[in-house]
Length: 466
Image 1 (cartoon, helix red, strand yellow):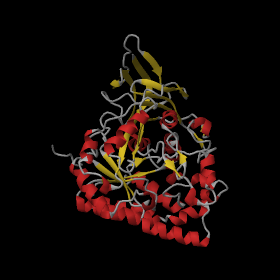
Image 2 (cartoon, rainbow, N blue to C red; image 1 turned 120 degrees about the horizontal axis):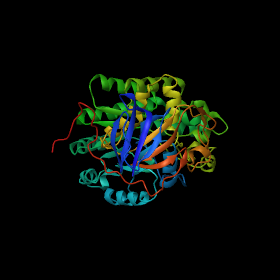
Image 3 (cartoon, rainbow, N blue to C red; image 1 turned 60 degrees about the horizontal axis):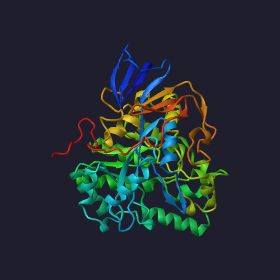
Image 4 (cartoon, rainbow, N blue to C red; image 1 turned 120 degrees about the vertical axis):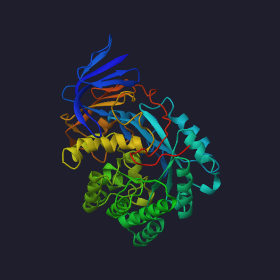
């Protein structure tokens, strides 16, 4: 069946203009003015609406087990995503001890198959590196999983890699055309801070920020960037949260290094004082929410292009799970929900507040995630031949955020009661409506695993030789 979306204002990463969009099958077949509807086509009046590409969230945690609690599954995560205008997210494979990446990937794809309202991709976590063979990396890339996550912290959980391991991974992954992404925090600094806070009895949520200072992140970002320079490899920094990290990104940009970075809405919008409130434990995440000075540097970096993507680091637990560790931040399942609110929040506090343009909004939430993570040209823009992942966004639809709106697992939101002036009202995934008039109408069997390739395909960036 064909669908003609008429009279809307299309917004891409570079242009905004009035045009119609014709969808045939699962793809966009034409974009232009005064398009004719084929016989039997559904005609949708988009007058007064913005027509956007589907949002791509490249950092989402699904079925994450922390401190004895499990986060939202594929169905609840994707339901919230669809209602928020997200049509693709990328989540993680973390192999168990003795399990190969191939085995873990098949297990993860099976978890998502028939259970997701939106499309999903996978990142492979390189943990316990010595337990695996290097040939797993090209196997993953061939299987459509070309991005690999590493950690400079969480040594007690068996996730941390050494500097040597990160350097080796950068060499190997880039040789085969993949991308390494790194969670950057200095583990030694964090552990020493936690020991001191424990001795002092300062373990409330309000003390969490002191355990992971901004300079601990900045120091680790600098070390990873140096390793990428030595390896001649691209690198992606997840959830940038500190001014010290922004300074490193600026220095890397000055010398022309291929360093990508993301920022999360909670690091742009929430204040560290939230951790000191009566429900501070519900705002606890890693890296922690920081002060206004850090937020200001993050906004400037996002506007200037030093930060390339907006990702949520969505890790959604119930209020009960978060409250259980409220007296000791060491016992908290870290993370906050966010996949269902990133687009309206960035519209309200980014575009409407004049921090970024509407084109930068689409560039950071749609286009660059597609280009960096190998979803381009299939996703991330509105053009003939691309997947018909389309969001109809009403810039005048006032909404107060609460769990009934986002419909995820959590019975709270870090943005409870916040009012935004625009909201995605209808969302299409590969030519199928999954949300109409803010009501979920698509099946959880529609979303599928997305095979990705050709990462880092920004103009002027390297392409791997065959």
